[in-house]
Length: 205
Image 1 (cartoon, helix red, strand yellow):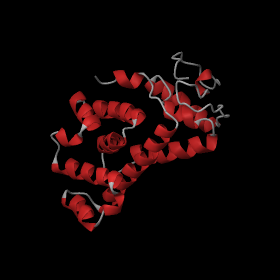
Image 2: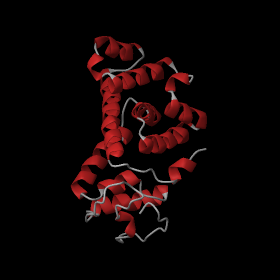
Image 3: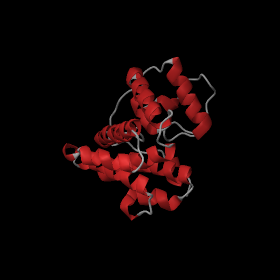
Image 4: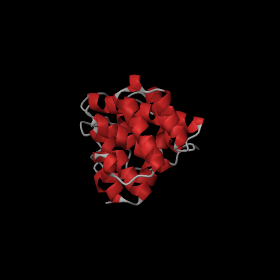
């Protein structure tokens, strides 16, 4: 899948479902996609021109793909007090701590696109503390990184810091949920040597 760029016709069962060595190190056979997940893959092809390799990797098990995609889409795309850019910034800051090649490439590209600022995307990936951030974004990323590095040390003072920066109670939950999700995703990506699609490296440069 990752090595092919030919766009199949909607409804086909194309080679893109193969869990190829270009996507990850595990030799898992592609499972049968449900109609909903096939439509999801078709939508990715239509909008992006490719299916993200993280979805290809999960496609060995349709139920796991559905669960992953539903949780991801709810956290990253559903209505929230956090903007889409803010959620992507959290994803990149967490992935930078964990040195996750896949997520830094994929979500670094998203930060570049949403912010229309390639420099910000690079700073998020390398060291968010070097970026000129608003107090809101600084507090948000400090919390996400502390939750990543030393979760047992997170306490009321850290939550108060988010509230002082303008985050509501639901916003605080969403900051934590996005950070926690990417800690899980980073570890899965590292465990199976998940590789980003080449397209990510060229986006919004």
